[in-house]
Amino acid sequence: MTPSHFTFSSTFLLGLTGLAFHRTHLLSALLCLEGMMLSLFIALSLWTLQLNATNFSASPMLLLAFSACEASAGLALLIATARTHGTDRLQNMHLLQC
Image (cartoon, rainbow, N blue to C red; front, side, top):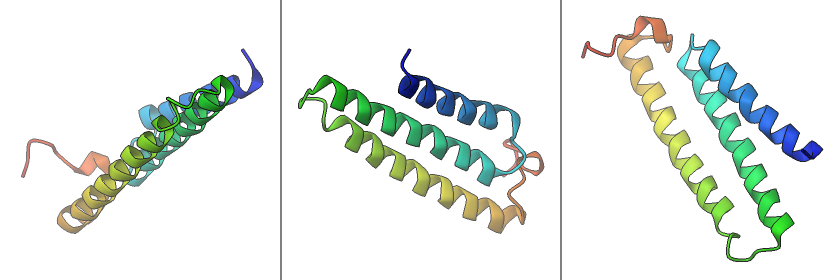
């Protein structure tokens, strides 16, 4: 495993463990998701550069577009929950309650 592959796989796993273990606030969960998407974007970009394949060159941009859509939807949910519940703590929100 090359050092770049190790770096990006470890950053992805750090984001995943942060998402799994630090679920107190919705904002911290969203930041962990963004870190995971950023590591995937950089890894996919380096992969297409290493292969010198032009047919995969649109894949990182497509991933970045989906990441931006995910971030905007997450921020909209954060604002909606902060307005309705008064906080972004995940323990205070019940999924079965409206």
